[in-house]
Image (cartoon, rainbow, N blue to C red; front, side):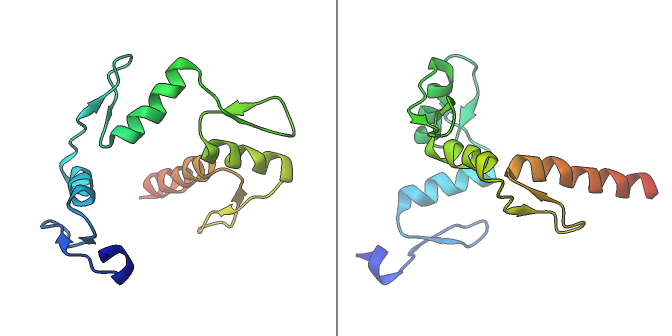
Length: 124
């Protein structure tokens, strides 16, 4: 019922953010502590949530259930497919807030943003 009322009775003692359930709070706390109890048996990468480990394991076993209708590529997650589809549409929803350059992928914008940070360090 708390979900419908918006009540968030589980409060993080570090940042004071509220959550509906105790399990959600436990996972959130890991963002502060860095705890990653779910570890990949192939590469030893750790995850805060079991669901993230499950998706990661699909990358190792080659399971790609999301296929592009415009080309022959397939992807592990629907989010990966949606990001790929932007390469076909030409849409670039990610914009640099410093120089207004646009990108179709968030990772490309993040990489670009670091060039501004690096340039600022050189000028200091």
